[in-house]
Image (cartoon, rainbow, N blue to C red; front, side, top):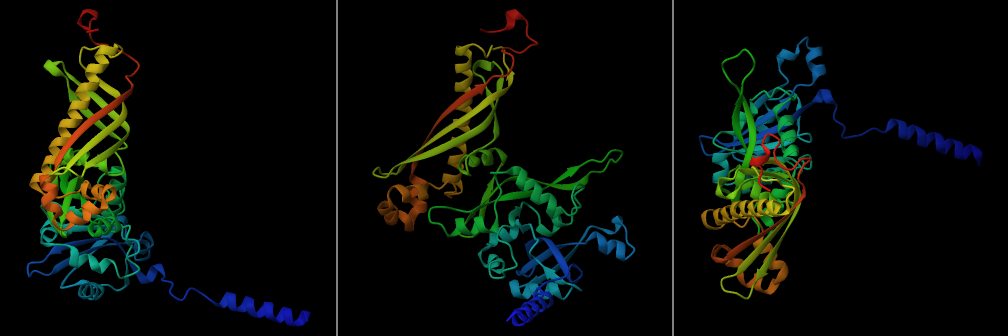
Length: 394
């Protein structure tokens, strides 16, 4: 019996040691794709550009140096994803590997034509990560910005990933987020916006190329409808997992200067009056934060002065929010906030009756805003230290 058990254990050990990962890919056999750029080609087809990393061991093995390049680009034009994959692979001596891709860039021209057809290429291949970030390149081709050699990171794609993470709850959108928003009733998808920028090196007069994430791209029926600027995007952030951090600059009445307020936490609530015609929505915004700048002559330790400052900040937030809501409701006619979703939650029967023509009902809806903030800290001093005693208002 013991001899039988020993033989069985020996056979199992041999099988375990001889069995490997059948689908394993060695680093020397693959080309790591860090980012993809999709543009509208001159012939109306799709131009795909891949940013492929050059691993450091490869440089050493070939006698190269860091100046040889940390990445290279390959590009092809095709009519769909399968066609593009074949054409791109023909230009590579290694198997293209997409599991490490962190960013997908879409040129503005292609985004305006529509992205529904091209996004399907990212869904079916299991090696495509749905957590890949998605950005629209404003005013340029995606391929142009993939060529920018960002100074801090190994490849521009890594810089974009870090910048998106720094943006936090704001414009950060993955393929998965975009597709869920596209398929959800009463909601429109958005992405972050990438645009060219420049920086100057010491001792050089000419500016080097760079890029920055700035604003939000709004999609409707799979097509780019328009852009939000940075200020409008900051108002949009109230509805994106709540506005965790932000700064507000509020002008005081009668030219008394301005106040800087930093938000540390916030929340919002949308109330719906589904019985009214037109529909009525009321947004309640609440925030907690502290004063980080006082460019007035007011002593903020005085309760009356603090109330004046509080109202000025609330008025500023309310005005900015109303301007943002007016733009998306009347100019773009896109419900990116989720009023339709809120109506669906509170009155499903009413939503089913309005769903087919939601754009019309949304455009006609009355939307109001109220703001309540809490100032948790006014700093270590009351009035600005540079003012004389007689200049301080108490």
